[in-house]
Length: 439
Image (cartoon, helix red, strand yellow):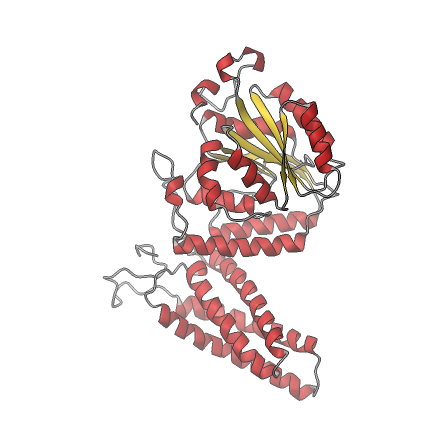
């Protein structure tokens, strides 16, 4: 950040920041831009902005701006936001005609010129006392991205068991599938250095809730420094987040980002720190070595391919018999499953042995076909006119049995590492061996 040397003492995290009234006139510039994305929040917006403005005025030693990002609200949110902007000089409004938290953050952060850009949820579930510890490492130049975490030992969190399980399960999935090292992807309390945001935002594609995860994963994979702050957090009982849709979108996002990292399609080099890469940074293909990580990756791929299979089967079943619909649906989903497990679960890249892997995968597919076809035949024998729901239930059970066998065959046979003395080891191999240069 070009203005960093004027803003803080680099000896620490900004702990000894001067009071606002003692700042020289040359530093009278907006240092922090806090975005509050909202959709139909007419009741919460006013109290949130006033409380945040009071806190920043009293505790933040530099000039700030609060930007309300209205995501196409249909109630009085925009009207209230305009009133707040007229009341406070440091409050502004950006109106978007499309929904999406990620879209709102990208729009405002990309247009901002503040050296530090942050955001928080309008319900202020996160205690504002964590705001200075969040942004101080960015102002000092120590870190590039900062995020609150509800899962650290120093955090104090009040929320129901359902959200607790979902949150921990999701972050465990990220650790297993994308090798994430941060602890909490979706805490609505984050900040990023301005120049990092300018380079990072064009690579982040999601416009919804997965935006946070994608931002952190790409930053971490590029070797940028991510600072985590334990927060005190109280769940908002009036939250209107559609959990099922959010989970589905997150799984799709994990798949897309994993595919981009696995193929090397993301130009992360442009994000590297000028002093060199983070030595811990590794390609995604080097990550899934251990059995727990492989199991998590396999389950994720399996869940997506099962959804694909059921959708194809239901579509084909409308115009043909059960057996005729089952075979092509299983074949297409099996090809996708093998390709996804090859790259994401077992870390195999490149075209070498790709045809062989697909051929072996088809043999594994034959086992699944035998199990599911046999199950359908047994159901047909037991009931002449079984309902469609019974067919789907039988197919799901048969697929679960086939899944266990498929993982064992994938791990021990299809994608097993080549022995050191195997033919072709003098060339660049595509297995998940530690020494494979393109793995």
